[in-house]
Length: 224
Image (tube, rainbow, N blue to C red; front, side):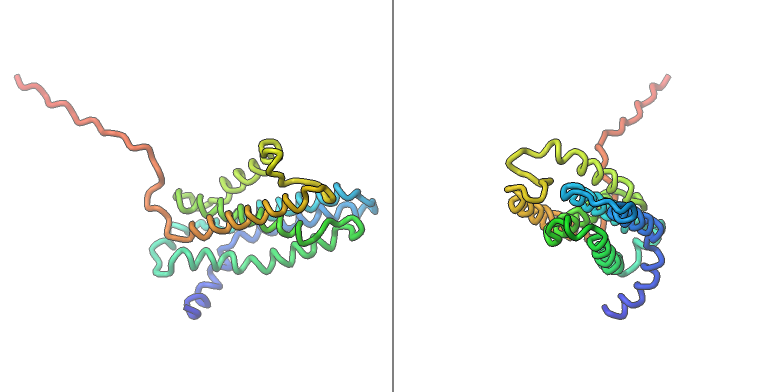
């Protein structure tokens, strides 16, 4: 197995959407870096909002990790999709960790929220992005599952604060009495998204879901 992974590492590395990931990384670093460039001191809630926005940008970029223009050509290879998918995530993970560390250092220290809790939020968002991309791969033939996955993630991020009930908070400001409860929910969301992603590592369905229909049989011609 180690030899197979070594043989796959270089082609998988080359197939990763580095331009998309690089663009997302640049935008994500710019979000918390703007106050430093301007010399402003943002309030605590603004810093938290900037970090959450940067985490969302990172997750949107990771939604494209499974994009593979040669997907239909690699389907028949003997190496399973689980290995190829896990290798893609493993190659990107160190850069994502280093990037998030830089984002935290860019945030003003005096106004920075608890880093462990904010990192939990970022991890849950990234896991949700990978789960959505995995579902798109498993249930469709699209070689670019990042587009629907990123769209669904962005829609969820915009609608969740409006649709979630008050007794299940997620997006609360630092210092709010519900902060610990909210991050318990983030932990559950991370676990659920990770479980869904692991469940999508099997080989995709051979045919996308379609509504079955009956084909009408041709009417027999009348003789004479």
